[in-house]
Length: 113
Image (cartoon, rainbow, N blue to C red):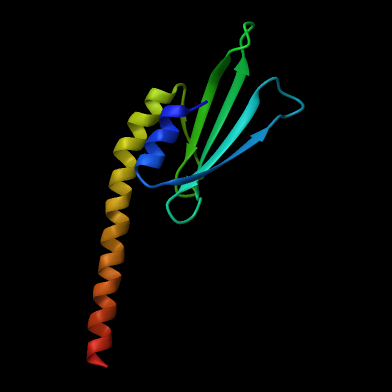
């Protein structure tokens, strides 16, 4: 379904897990896609339906990064990829900077003891 997004995540070292939900009260199908490097704490919720020809039509993509309470909503995969390319790289740089700072603090604290 979201082939380009899966390729982008695999290329950048993210792991993912897929789940499918068919709610009883709505005509939409729901596809839940969890991804992350170490922990699967990012989530895509894809609501889709079927056209009369049987093809799948994406109605809405909700993206919740890093356990956000309010999702970002996209209506096609191109918008989602554009956002992920910008945001994930910035977030990874912040995480690496924090880890480097922690390691530096641990080394200086250990040397003074």
